Amino acid sequence: MSDDRPSGPTPPPTVPDEEVVFIGRIFTPYLSRSDCPRNVRQAREAEGHALLEIDPVYRPGLYGLSKFSHVIVLYWMDEAERDILVQYPRHVDGPCGVFSIRSPARPNPIAISVARILSLDEEQGRIEVEQLDCRSGTPLLDIKPYFPSVDSAPDATIG
Image 1 (spheres, rainbow, N blue to C red):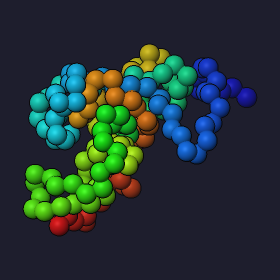
Image 2: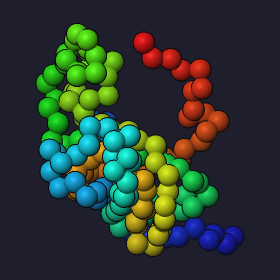
Image 3: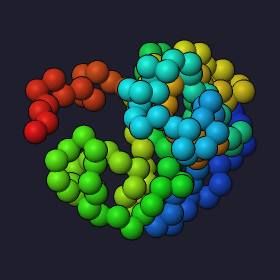
């Protein structure tokens, strides 16, 4: 049986459930945390792009991604505070629990963005996407294809 899927190095063994593995890094024009826009909307208004660089061992996982126009990018905001549960955002009157806002300061500083793919090089492990709101070198946790049929919630509300 012929298999046209790309081969590559064997991924490292699965880690225990209490750990995550970074699959690569994100490169943006923002060199420090203080340079970063406050959110993805502001990052996109500044234009430009972000580059997702996938580590060699994970590059075979890009097979088939070229069929998609957008991806969900999960990244680790490694410089964020992790011990703040109640915050006072500028755009809201009064305090907010960390799970009701999208601040990177949270117990697990995982950020999520939907981004349009601008270019994809599976062999080099490079995905150019719309701008993201993180500093250059931010650890990349995962990439998932965006499916409008299940990832969009047209009837969603905010209060």
